[in-house]
Amino acid sequence: MLVNIIDRVRLLFQKDKELYASLYSIIGFYPHNITYYKTALLHKSIRHRNNKGKPINNERLEFLGDAVLDCAVGDIVYRHFPGKREGFLTNTRSKLVQRETLNKLAKEMGICDLILSSGRSNTHNSYLGGNAFEALVGALYLDRGYNACMTFIQKRILAQMINIDKVAYREVNFKSKLIEWTQKNKVKLEFRLIKGGKDKDGNPVFSYQVLLESVCGCSGDGFSKKESQQKAAKDTLDKLKREPQFIDEVFKAKGERTKMEEEPVNDIPNTDESQTFMRISDTAVSDDVKHETAFRERVFSEKESAASEEREMVMDIDNVSDHDRENIIATAERIAFEEEHEE
Image (cartoon, rainbow, N blue to C red):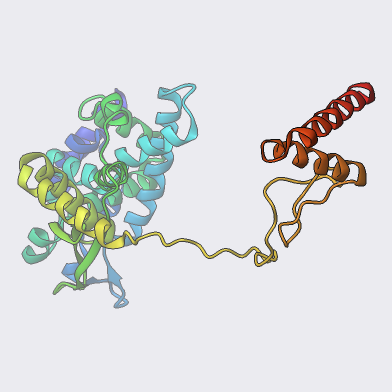
């Protein structure tokens, strides 16, 4: 309490009274060394140089603030979600420190109003506020230390402006959502680069378009490939929800593609090297079974042949005389008697 009173009294005699007051409303502390904060709010588009001719801007403080922010937010997330696995913690931290979140915070807290930059860059570069936010954290770290940064993030950001639980369980990766939808529906997806280059201030710019089965979806512009593809994916998902005819067009194109890719399945040639020209009987014949030769002649044993001849004689009994018939009958009886006893 006493320190705050001293800082306020000292503020009455400072040259940058308005900047001191503005920074206090933002970070909750009065600066000890105002130079750090002035540098944090100085964009490179101003092209300011020191007495030695070296450029002065917030890029170095931005680098430092980014590292401090990752560490502090990681510490907070780790303690806030006990038992959660590494993947969940990493994803939550990424959501809290992503560029879009920092841009919104910088705008809501009034940081954007304090940035010194050319008007052209201020309206065009969407990273301006987020970069200044990180640089301000870097300045706070150099001016008051790590504990002051933790207090700023916990009491000023998470307690008043961001619900950490809602952020943790909110899905913001629209590209992953679109990829998941295409995989479930077996739809071919492509992110095509429409243009890439730099703007007038040397900032990289990209424009990507979503193609679903070669059907044009939405496009997105951004200062990185990731940002551009995220915007294109988000708008394409919204279009899939709003426009049923767009879905119909995509699945029609999918049907045409899959139909063209389907080819008739031909019979696979036989690779069997067996002697298929040999004729083999379906039924195996044993050596002691009666069979037919290639000349269609029956083969019998000697005894069977004699009996067969006598039977043939019996078959012609109607064509002989009475005397011969009696002899034939007697012979037949004898043969039958012999066969009966043989059995």
